[in-house]
Image 1 (cartoon, rainbow, N blue to C red):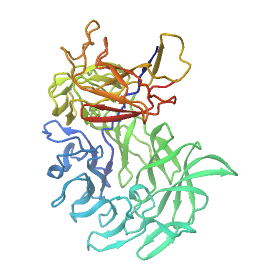
Image 2 (tube, rainbow, N blue to C red; image 1 turned 90 degrees about the vertical axis):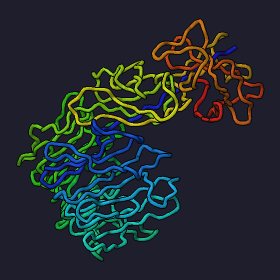
Image 3 (cartoon, rainbow, N blue to C red; image 1 turned 180 degrees about the vertical axis):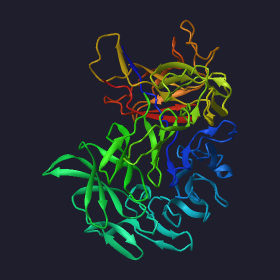
Image 4 (cartoon, one colour; image 1 turned 60 degrees about the vertical axis):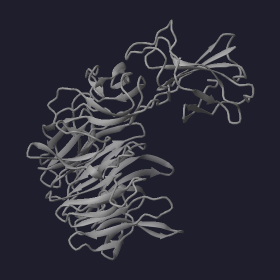
Amino acid sequence: MKLVTVLIALVLPAWSQYSEMAATDDGAQLYFTTPLVTREATITQFPESRIFRYVGNSVELFAERGNLAPTNFAGSSDGARSLSVSGDGQSVTFTLTNICVSGDSCTSSVERAEIRGRNSQVVGNGSAVMSRNGQWAVLTSSFRPQVQQEYSLINLATGARTNIDPPATLNGQFSLASDGTVLSRRSTGPATGFQLGLRRGDEFTPLRITGTFALLGMSDDASTVYLNRQEVVGSASLGTVLVAYDVQSGTEKRIHASSAQAQYVLLGLSNNGHRVLFRVITRFFNGPAFVGDVDLVKTAQLNLGTDEASSSSTISGYGNYVFVGTTTGRLLRFPLDSQANATSPEELVPSTVYIQFPLRLSPGSLIKFSTPLRDQNLQDRILVSGRPLYVVAREGNQITAQVPWEITPGLAEVRLDFTSDSPFSQQANAIVAPEAPEFLSTRRVLQDFSGYVTALPQPGDVFHMYFTGLGPVDGPVQTGVPAPIGELRYITGNLRCRFHNGASDAETVFAGLAPGYIGVYQVTFRLPANTPSQPVSSIQCGLNTSSFAVFGGPSLP
């Protein structure tokens, strides 16, 4: 009889304390988004992104969904996002994602763009960007399948709206100037494609740019456009260059050069476009942030602390300050001198511990997550319904922990219990379900009691598979304690799995806690008589009244 043990990985969520930033012209105010909350806040809903404002050496909540947040479903993109601020700080534009408005059945996610402060208004369904003088906005309608998106240029002083061509940049960022100019992509028909240019009123002026490039953005005075240019000789790519294109003269300046595999991401521009904040990324690596100066034709990397990287950044409108949110949860403000050198930073917010939980937990199950602080002791510090998670393993900033057996299904508060000078803490709610099945580990271990496996599994062969989150078991259990070896703990539910379409369910020989392990369930299957001789591509399973699937089940290595 062949015995095959299969392990398939836990999904590792990502984390980020600060994802978007926008600063005023003088750098006195910083607006930013974060899923964190102030320490005195009481949270009664699921995690969401909120907008905070740093001004006058303090942090204050600026925007959240509040009573617009639905109570029946949640998603990872919920909250206030797509942030832009006028240079004087009097107008702020943002988008509320996944909200319930009056008369809405609240059966699907709705997003709505708003402006607060000067020219306060609901802009419409979708997302919006605003010019630095606060007079103009571009609204992009919400995406809907089979429906073409619409784009509107709005004069916020008069309310006049004009349908326009799509902005030429991702999400419309860095595409709108204070005179109403839009960096646009105009369709020229099915045969010829589109043109890139500047739309001023009813006039469209094509950009005189040749070669292989991608537009990154335009300055607020519409004088400078930034390009991600590929330098190509014949069919060979020699590298990628960040280029500043002068709209009036049609000339280009090389700001930074990198490898052919790299791409540039625009993080911020001064109003006149003469100072630029950018990042170099590759397929596997998000590089550090750089400051570039067009007049000086120079760039300089922003230097952070050990084991610390920038997660988000922006630059003030006058180009005299750079703001950085770091992977350790710090918010920093770097003054820039006349030579575009970043001097010693001011710490606006100290390190804040943050982890991203799955929204769905199960008593006794394993979860995997990351924390940016490698040396932080997490044991007994992460509380679910007041009970600590048990940290099973830690490798660098990657943590595997067990959800307490003692918590009950329902809505549970997740809270981090740390002493910190930060004004922020992590508090959120998660759903605790009776079961949350998940396959474990990336390794596949093959054990054979009658010789090496040289053929596909056959009818009657027995498989071991390992899960977490299969729910309650018979007999006593204790958080952080391995399952007993001399006494089996069977699950109380009914688990069944099918390994091939058209075949019968496999026989579940055993389903219970894996002896000697914490939070791991072992399930032993015997393949049915009608098992076909072909590799397993997916497994269909049912546990009590729920069903789930996995691709890449037990097969030869």
